[in-house]
Length: 154
Image (cartoon, rainbow, N blue to C red; front, side, top):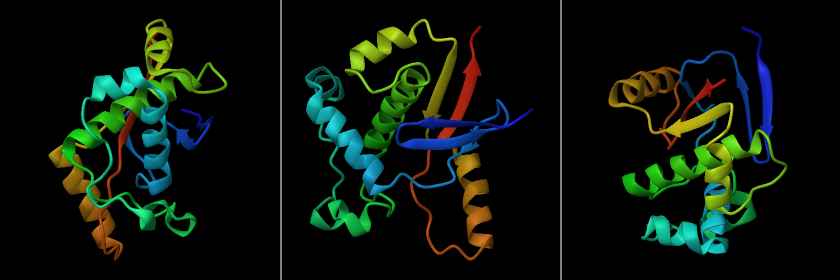
């Protein structure tokens, strides 16, 4: 299957199959800052999430320009799930729209989308395979990545 480069505002990736794919880059402090800003700007999204999405270890160091590409740390499992859900809705919406809209608007528009982008956390088996790949390449740390799949609806 030919590869298609999708540029989704701040998410860039290549799609070569319908199989789940692990992001090439971990979720960065910059990605998480965009998520936090979306929550701050959208009261409905903030109410839906119901809890703080600020990581436990979040501070000036994580938000400084020199650390924007560093992997986000201190994220709980619930925060990671919320991020994946938000990123899925946002990525699907940006396939057909130029910029992000309020969360509920994006959800309603995505209900009739012909292509769905889904981000999720890796399963335990996927995580082990992923971790062994990176440790075998002398990578000293494992960061929070999302698994993405794209489904053509129509």
